[in-house]
Picture 1 (tube, rainbow, N blue to C red):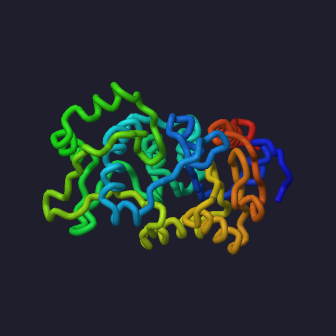
Picture 2: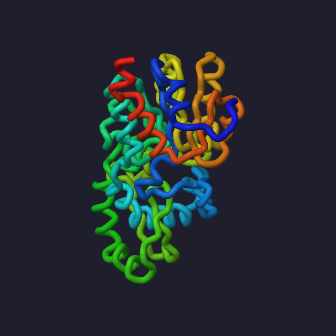
Length: 284
């Protein structure tokens, strides 16, 4: 691994002329106003696990109350310069696909066309019994009918502190009414992979195919703490293709990486796109 610090043009030198698969994490979306779990300035957070959600009605009630208030913040978020840079690199033929651990749909909103939403997205809800999927907008209408004025009361009394994964910090959730599937009465869950839950195999296979077809792997804004992302770094290393990591602070992929750039993702990706598509580079 190359010693820190490294410059964006070192990143371009490594990736130039290669077909790149990109793996992104929460650090890429912080510039869009979506907080992360493990950034250097992030407060301690205890995300809900899959076992808590399905096994404890109180946890489930708490989650849906928080999500009812906070999901629209994620829906309203817009792509930042880093998302747009990756979309531009895809259009230029340099990026061949994006695997994202984020659930915010910002890559798609930015114009990236080949995106694997590894952990799902905030915009869909799934019934754990009949597997019916509905939009989060549809569920919002049902929750509003079951909980009139809840959203306004929370905002008026506590303000709004947004948390990751499309929820918000809400202290009093005891009177929140949770709704079930209107088709079978089953338990509804965001179509998001929770901590302790397994990423669907077809989704993993699709992501692996992007890595296998690439000449390099670029990791942007992920600490690679969870295995669902780290596996792709290990796969790239096994295939002897270079791995570049761009992230503020250490990651679990630093040791095997070919290059580590300890810097903000947005500005680094913008610099990479600018360098890659500059007339001088094209002529040379």
